[in-house]
Picture (cartoon, rainbow, N blue to C red):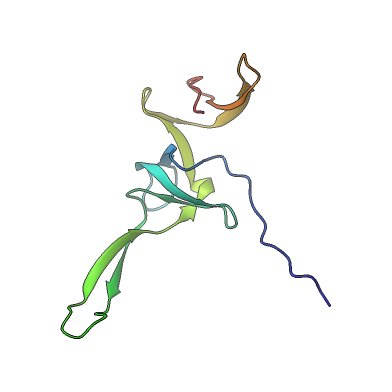
Length: 114
């Protein structure tokens, strides 16, 4: 018998709550906050980015159907961390504070995120 493999979890450069800028695709240039991360597929859900519409059928008799909008996931490689102070997108580097804590830092501005 073969063992069932657990899904692979990817190390992502963004976390929930980060401010990011989309660097490619239809929503290129948009800035938003990461609402949810999906490490198994290396995707993120960003507020106001990749907005889709879904036609929802009525559930009960006499109820009318509706059109719901929601943010669909995009791949994490299409986003970059964004500095709201400097208004610039940047890659990240990992550095240590004086206390010895590992933190994420924007390369262009030197701003510490965590």
